[in-house]
Image (tube, rainbow, N blue to C red; front, top):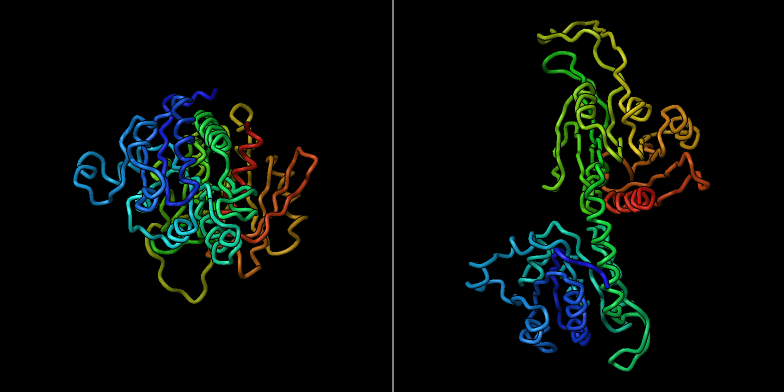
Length: 401
């Protein structure tokens, strides 16, 4: 028996033949002491009744987006915030299509769209529907949105055909969700810090030098860590990006400010330094605007190396220190050298000379270099930065736990 006491599950039932299995899923979660609230779609009522769901869940069944009673008691925003996790089972081809396009035409889709919690989908459909290119494209889109999938499995279907598309067994869905929640609540005790974006080093009040960086990859990593339950702090240089409310955001401008913010947040367990910190600052800052001159020169001095400081700290070095390297040539050579010289555990490197990745792009292609593993490097092929972040955090979780 799995102890899911205090765990809050929002369960969405959609209209498919496999909806009858939802009753067994609810029974298993209640048996393991989970608190569960249920949303049933209009089509799902053709297969299971709200009364049977309420009897098993011991709770209210929500079905109408514009119900006066529901909106007074708990509106769709509050319902989405209440849950620790959201499960959609069965997730029909129609539901998957709607979610991939951001549709919010009923309570189920509106709650999911409004949620900042992890969403699991348990697909169930005919094998031909599952294999259709439009379904595959929708799945790809949802994966880039950080939706997770349980199944489907291969087997005999209600239509008489055989193949992939059958909804996973209720016990497998219970195990998947239980493992996720167990890891998430365990991770709450683990502190993670991420740096992202550029820094500005002022020449005078209106001019500065900086590094090219959008901060997108670092922000996505912070989001992924937070959604896995880590106590996450993001120290961000100047960007226009937004972050989940569960992430502790600290905005800075200069490398010195980023360094001090990092110092103030030690000790931590995981440090991910993805920021493009300016290597140099102005030796003597001008407090008045400099006037235009025919010849102009400035004196620079090195900024403190934040990655090097943290990874070589005697008493407060994190268990896992990850640095980033944006290179334009000799990727292997430069990344391996940085891994050694900075004394960090991983280097995540990318070739920013490629026009389709890095900086302002939503896509990236990286190679992870490891210090103390038999597998010295691992390439993550071209994907959205949100997907790259999920893969990086998968590896963080495996190493930490």
